[in-house]
Length: 88
Image (cartoon, rainbow, N blue to C red; front, side):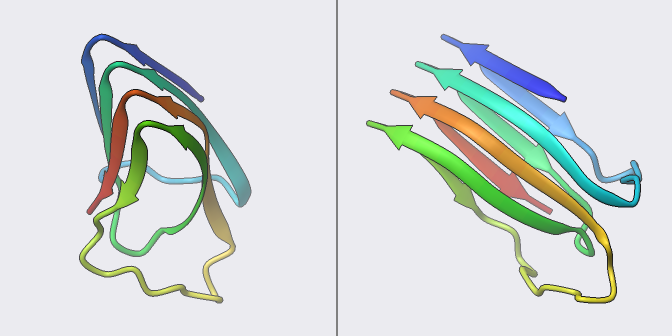
């Protein structure tokens, strides 16, 4: 999937969804805005986000890695003068 947020706020609630087996990529581009992504607590998530005068923060309560779960969400992209949060 792809998320673009410029001069605004985007909220994604993925807590009632399922991932396919393997790696799923979510590409984000945030400029002068913000994005909040909610994921289920048992998901394995990898962050590969580049930031310039901004950032993308993992604010999940439980960040434990489950090696038996082969479903992985990879969040990659850019935050420029903006920010993002990952929550559960």
